[in-house]
Length: 258
Figure 1 (spheres, rainbow, N blue to C red):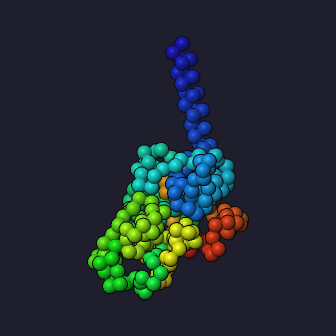
Figure 2 (cartoon, rainbow, N blue to C red; figure 1 turned 180 degrees about the vertical axis):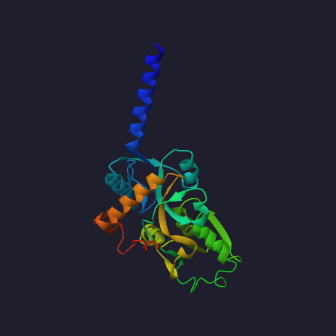
Figure 3 (cartoon, rainbow, N blue to C red; figure 1 turned 90 degrees about the vertical axis):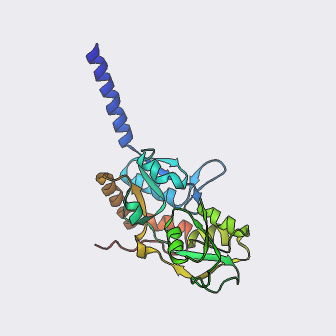
């Protein structure tokens, strides 16, 4: 009787293991258009979502999207709430201390945004004493803290909130994604009277060159499978087709240096 029970338990554990192996749980945000957003009926969509699905298709596993607030992404990953993060997470040395990353899957520069004509440049002298709005716990926030010590900083919890706070007049200038600022703010009615300031800024000097898929440390086989699938998606035209749905410029990352 005990042997039969033990065998049943082992069978259930093996079945659960196989089921988990066939499902990839993916941490996504859902509040970062056009990379991820949630429609009125609760459906997730966006470039991150479609890339995640394309990778699952390539690896022949089922995608299970798990929505997670940005600030809790890495803690939730390491607590095994999901297996990987596909949420436009920039690769940085600081983050690499606690998670591993895939090869980059896109690279987009940053931009300053302000009222039209309010600023002609964004040097530390130009922004001295001004309040800069930026996403907390991000490479952009680190850049602002290091580059603009004589400016005030307003940290917000979501990228979209950067532009809402700017429109509400709670800061002088915003610093965010060149894509999100354009698509979700400047091209919308809320962005009327605002414009990008100066040239695009690449933060890749302090990163590995773009945005990656995060996974728990030590999961080398999963990392290899993701990189292989990503390379194939980029090779076979799937990446180009998906990116063209959302962007009218190239977001393909630069080749990883050996």
